[in-house]
Every structure is written in structure tokens, then in C-alpha cells.
Image (tube, rainbow over all chains, first blue to last red; front, side, top):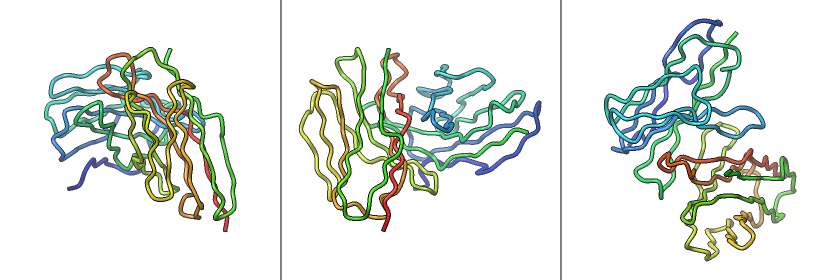
Length: 112
Length: 116
């Protein structure tokens, strides 16, 4: 099993550009989430989904969109990149809140 | 409001020393889940342990042990006879109470450096 796969691993964007961070899981997990990690801040929840067609906002949703058309995929879109979105982004999935989340390997994004 | 506090920002020990990483949490939930994750220098997040609020038994797994005490809202993590490979950032996390289906509130992490 591949688990949670994130692409790309690294990305540099110019301010104002848009892009999509890809996330796919092959474990048939209903729950998927996006977190961002910033130095000294731990991880913060951006958006999450409890199943195909259902998404909701987390703690820091501004500037990001998500959609969940299939169980497997949960892409994160940056609409107009800003330097404040420079961060490491983690996608995660879970079968149930009791079991915690399995994380992808992360995408390191730099906005210049 | 929910909160996870890892008061130790950085800890440095010499190999074979025992080290305890502290985690204190706040939540209004009566049923909740606590987790520890390890983030080695390579950057991935590795799940270590899950504990639910009904189970206060301590747990030991090899050199790792966890002490969960509801009375003090703490979930501390001890590494016995530390090794260089234990060097990493360790995160304590708590299930969110806002209905976001088990998503997590993370502490800010403790960076552990184990020197040979």
C-alpha cells in the first residue's frame, strides 16, 4: 500500500500564482485533511472532508479551496499565492476519529 | 478552548540517558483521544501512540512509555536509554472538540537531540 501520497514534494511559486497540491490515499479512508506546518506553530488544520462531496473549513482556511469528488483524492488549491502561504503542507487520512490520522510525506511550498 | 501545551521547546541529552517529554492538554470533551507523533529530520510524521480518555493505563513499547493522567490532564512520553535515532521533533496532539471528525489540535512540538 502506498498510504497517503502527496505531490509535488517541493514547489516554488511567485506571488499571485495559483496551484494545486495533490493528495491521494489508497486505504479507503473516509476522512481526509490538510494541515500546514510553520516553525514554532505546530500543525494547523486548513480544510477537511468527511467523505466524497463533503468538505469543511478548519482553523486557517483563508486563501485555500478544496473539493472531494472521490474517496481517494483531496486536492488543495491555492487561489492567489502569498508569501504568508510559505509552509510545509501535510495531507492526512483516517478511517475513524478514534484512530488518528496517517500523514503524507509533505509538500514544501515557497512563495516569493 | 482546546489547547495542547508542550512546554519543552528543545531538549538535548547524551545517548543512553532517559528523557521525558511533557504534554498537557485542555478540553471540554468527556470522550477524547490523545496522540504522539514523531517527525524525524527527513520531515515525515510518524504515528507513535493513541490513547482514549477512558483508558488511563500506562503503556510501554520497547524503550518508549507513556503516562496518561486525567487528573493532571497530562500525557507524558518517556524514552528509556535514548539513542541517536531518537533525535526528532515530537508532537503531542488532541482530538478536536468542534466536530471536525477527529481532526487534531497539535502542540508546538519538542525537539529532541540525542548526542553520541
